[in-house]
Length: 89
Image (cartoon, rainbow, N blue to C red; front, side, top):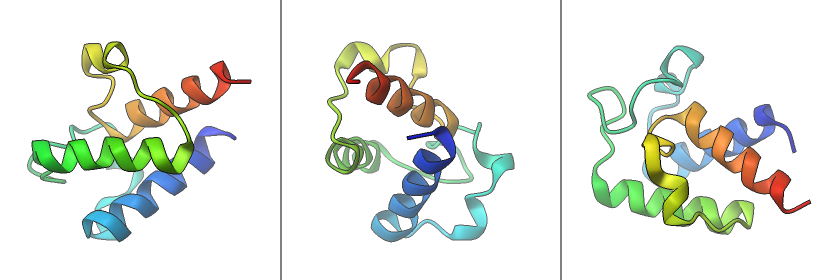
């Protein structure tokens, strides 16, 4: 499972489960904060996103994995999922 595949699944989750406009899910927005003015995630959406990721990717995101804003942008979340999936191998 590579980062491009993870990014594609993640953006699919964001469009289907959270009704994020697909036009916002472009590379130039992959490093902006999800809670910022562009994507407008609130804390409840962030929690549901975390749970959806755990189910979809069959990973467990521990609280230590959230330190240092590792769950704040699309690219950081992709990196986190990639690391978790490769720890399991």
